[in-house]
Length: 173
Ligand SMILES: CC(C)(COP(=O)(O)OP(=O)(O)OC[C@H]1O[C@@H](n2cnc3c(N)ncnc32)[C@H](O)[C@@H]1OP(=O)(O)O)[C@@H](O)C(=O)NCCC(=O)NCCS
Image 1 (cartoon, rainbow, N blue to C red):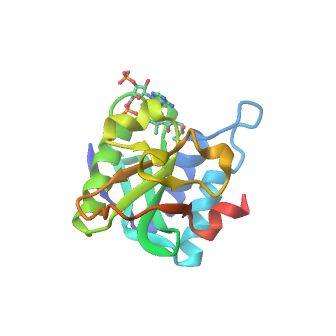
Image 2 (cartoon, rainbow, N blue to C red):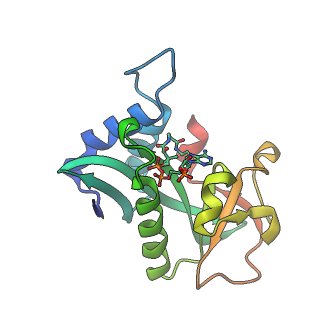
């Protein structure tokens, strides 16, 4: 497996990955919110190019993860992670974990304070994510409290508390 930065030429393959990973049972092949979200984050200039990574298996894009600019309270710097998707036929073979380890390390190398996401704690705890509430970080929508998680990085300041805000594209879906 090869993990590398996504290039412009990967755009179609990245859409394929998310459309397959997030397909609804009744609507296989339909364009998914997650695939559209990647395009909108990019169009808005909120996607962090150094944190948009693909996993290649046998020369084929098997997975994609990206991060976008976000803020906690009025403090910019944290990034929001998502979407993360892996082709269904290659799930549970380590692709998602490889992307997660790589993107967290890259964010840390950029001296960012934290990576924040909405997702299943059962999956993300293994990468060092903790519930945001434990760090005094709250979601903008109270219903998300059980799924909003933060991975503090080396540059995480203890006083970074407040409400987490994703890039605006997340609110369009
Ligand atoms: C979630 C996802 C990205 C994980 O990628 P992956 O390549 O399948 O993951 P890995 O092979 O690295 O790890 C697989 C492990 O994660 C576990 N896992 C996957 N999703 C999980 C979840 N929601 N909760 C708990 N564990 C989960 C698997 O059971 C497996 O466990 P095991 O190693 O004990 O067998 C991938 O399954 C996927 O694309 N799913 C559909 C889209 C999605 O839900 N994306 C995440 C949105 S938050």
